[in-house]
Amino acid sequence: MKPSVALTLLVVGLFSSAQAIRASAFVLNPDGTFVTITILGGGVLYGINDSGQLVGDSNSSGPFVYSAGVFTTINVPGGPAQASGINNHGQVSGWYETINPIGTHGFIDSNGDLMTIDVPGHNDNPGTLAYSINNAGQVTGWFTNDTGEHVFIDTNGVFTTFDVAGEPGQLNVGIGINDSGQVVGAFGRSSDSFRHGFLYSGGVLKTIDVPGATYTQPWGINDSGQIVGFYFDATGVEHGFLYVDGVFTTIDAPGATGTQLFGINDQGQIVGSSSFFATPEPASLLLLASGLAALAILIVRSRITGTSSY
View: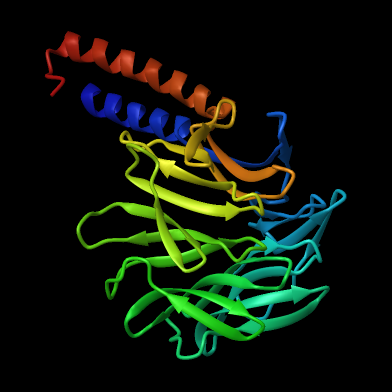
């Protein structure tokens, strides 16, 4: 093997081991302390209510409720699923996929009693995805039909739908809703490649974009109108944000290479996820050392024999 080839393989191997990414779920308290929540098999926290109950997804067991240190799995029909919101009554909102027939459906879980949510006229690619639920039982999310993606609000089975972009085929997703019926989410425009955030309040739409960001995704809103989400800056780094009265505050988990914020309750507690570049395993470092030694031998041999390194 030529030394240059060996060097390339070593660099690629080291980079791959060093760039392995691990994720960590957390609750951020109003005093600024981060509390890590260990999810079996890894996973994400999406929602929090005023009692501190959490909802999210485990990579190994699917959607769950976390309360007083206990994980309870939410049983849904079909395949992959996500639990995204929880209100103060313990009702959980989310979505699940089915294989036969293929489709995605929203749901509300009330103490194990599952109710499916399908926006009339939705198609099955992907279908209806419910995200957040307020204390009145209103649910917001998004759905697809032949004209694209649209935001919906479900009020006791009566659906209000709207598009933010006002352009057929553009992204329109509702994610968070509070007790006043204010909705946050994201949309796209044909005039640029950015993702923009929005606030829908009393029938009025307001764009929410972090200054300088290429991607803004509001996710949660509490009854005080505090909004959390995440954005990508101009260099592609992901940060969490808190938006209050027109002011953005960037929030990065300590030591993280990326931070996402998903939910906020009326006490100001926030749930989110952070990503980190994992430290190479000892075995990887040993392999690197062995490879460097082999590379040194190859270089010496090439000099002795007069062979080229390229």
